[in-house]
Structure formats: structure tokens, C-alpha cells
Length: 474
Ligand code: PHE
Image (cartoon, rainbow, N blue to C red; front, top):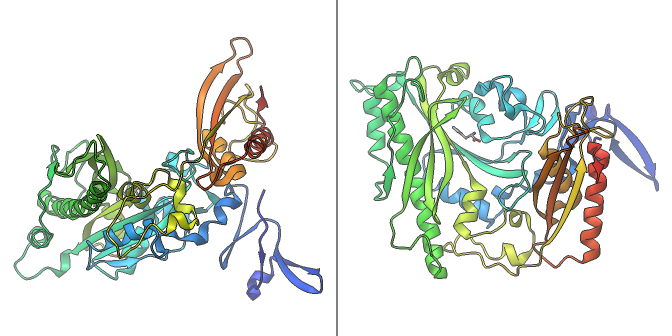
């Protein structure tokens, strides 16, 4: 089912797709059939289309640009640590499969490409799943040695307090040009001189692994150990500096509130580097921070695959890239308990943040009651229908994907659903059919829901499970 969009004006070439309705003497143009309009662009949907209208309607929000929004303040805080980097904060969220996956070397069968994980408009067009989608183009544009890209990104995922299908990332990259070194200086020397310019910190950093490892985290062909050691050090020191700035701000917010059971204000910050894997960097690492008694993964990074720079027409450059999730950082900076709050337009939420005041812990305006409801259903045992969401589909055990349940919950309930969780699952010993039970937690962040409202939401949720997935309620 493809949403229909009403719009006020069209360009000449767009008119080809439109019919005109005459209502009350006014011509209103209407995009028909399988065209999807996103801001001023039209996309032709095909059978790959799986983006619900609730997602499309939130595209214009751009929380990372909204004045005094915690996500925007977090972006500014990180940007302030990279004063010489060029920022790109307004890149359009619709990208090609080429930009999002192919240009970065994702294998053809990578799970990230599947319709259960990614929002497609058509076979070759997606809502970007990460800011890395713009890496190749930004390297090709070749406008600055360092850049930062902040943007909304889209993923089909779980429904809970730390996952939302739209979130925000910042991509950072820094390159050096082998053909533009000062006379007599090596590439590695040049990079080390830049490392020396990064502010020093005094936190404890665990980095037990070697800078690279021939099997687990290899150097790329054409990169020397000295070059990668220097770039790795520049990458790690730059990101440690970011984390120190963020977590010191978070700690003072915590100390102001007088509640720091697990991270006393005087205890030094602890961070650690762990080896990682991304198709578009090698070697690769993740940075984790010890926060509230747990190791928290805050970012991924690595040495940019040379093929990306070669294909972008800058084969003489080498460098690093990182990607950091802004929403989780903002939640921790401000002690925001639920990611849905970012989408609230309630002044009781928005008025608590200011880009000019010191960071202060968010004061929940009230905790409205939650209401749990369970739904149990049978999946079909045979495999007959195609996967993914489609009308009148019959979802079998084979092609059932939990993200389809999550999406129906979002679609029906919007931000009134806090959490959806599988609580029971079994296969009938005789019929071989699979039974699943999901528990849905309904709660508004802004008011108390009435019983009638939750019953009505749950009723529609169950009905949509039947209609869209073809399950049989128990
Ligand atoms: N794009 C990666 C993600 O979303 C993060 C990343 C960016 C990793 C750049 C390495 C380099 O998980």
C-alpha cells in the first residue's frame, strides 16, 4: 500500500504523474498510484516499497537542526571539538542502494540490505541507514581535509526505550594527501605532527590490542604500518577528546543532580578501544565508555578503505572515518529515559534544553502509568508467501520477521507504544505450527491513557497483525 500525497504545486515534469481533482471549485493536484512525494522530490515506488507513511511524515523534522533540541545541542558539542572540519548538516535522506551499500563494499547478501532491516522506496532507493552513505560523495567533492556529516538515519528495528526507527548520526572523516607533503617530511611524520595538536586529556584509556592484526584487523594493501599507526593515533586521540568533552558534561549534569551512585563525580572516566569490523574500514575499532556500571559502545571507526578513495577520484589520499549515534549520547548527557521524548513537541520537554546554558539533567514532568497487553498468534507452518510486509500476506514461520510486528505497532500506536517484546514462543508438537506471544507496553509520555484508548489501540494492533501478516490470533 503506497501513501497518496496531496501537494500544492508541481513542476512541469512532475505533472506527468498527476491527476487533477476538482473540488469546491479548487483544483487540487494529487500524486496518484505508486508515486511517493518526499518534500520536493517524487519517487516511483515498486514492490520493494516498505516505508510507512508515519516514517515519511517525520522526515521533515530534522531534529539535529532544531534550535535548542538535545540532539542538536549534542551535535554542536561534538562539532566544537573539530573546529577546522567542514560540516554538512542538510543532506537529503533518500539515497541510492549504491550510496548506502555498494559504494562502501557491503557484500550482496549483507543482512543490512534486507527489507526487514531497511526502508526501501523502490529496488534501488532507500532511506539512508547511516551517514556513511555520503562518504564516497563527500570524498569525491574534495572540499576539505576533514568533514562532519550530521543527519537523520532510518532503520527498521525493535520498539523499546532506546530504539526508534529514525535516529541521528554524525559521520566524521579526515584525510591526508600523499602528494602534498612538506619537503622532506614523510606521511607518517606529517600525521604525527597533527596528533600533537590535539588537546591532551588525563582519562584512563585501555587499548590492549595492537594497532592492526594480520587476521583480525588487517592493514590494507599499499598502507604501511607507520602510516596506519599514525592515522590510528590521530583517530583515537581525536575521538577520546570528544568523549572527554561529552562525559565531563554528563558528569557535571549528574553531580548537579546529586545522584551518581555508579559514577561518582570524582572518579576518572574510563574508556576502552576494542577491535571491530565494518565493510568500509580496515583496521576498525569501537570505543566504549564505562558509564553507570556498564561498558557502553559509543562509536565505530577505522581507516577508510582505499578503494572508496580511489573510486572517489582521490587515490592520493589516505585517512580515517568514524560514525557516532547522537540520540544515545544526548540521552546520556541529559539523562533522558525514553528516546520517544525527542519527538515530543510538548513545551514541558523542549523548554528544559538550551544551547547556551550548561547541560542539566532532564526532570521528567511526570511518569504516566503504563498498561501491558499481550497478543498470541499462530504462524502458518508451510512456506508459500513472499517475505516482508504486504497486504493479505500469509506469514509463515519461514518468512516471519519480528521487525514487521514492530512496524505495525508503530504504525497503529505512533509514540503511544513504549516497548514490544516477545514473551513466549513454542512449536505445536503435532501441527508443527509456531505460536508467538508479544507483550506490548502502552504509555503516553504526556498524559494518562484511558482504558478505552488502550483497548482500542490494542484491538487495532491485533487486527493489523492478522491483516498484514496473515497470522491467526489465539
Ligand atoms: N556507519 C557505521 C554504523 O552505522 C559507523 C561507522 C562510520 C564505522 C564510519 C566506521 C566508519 O554503524
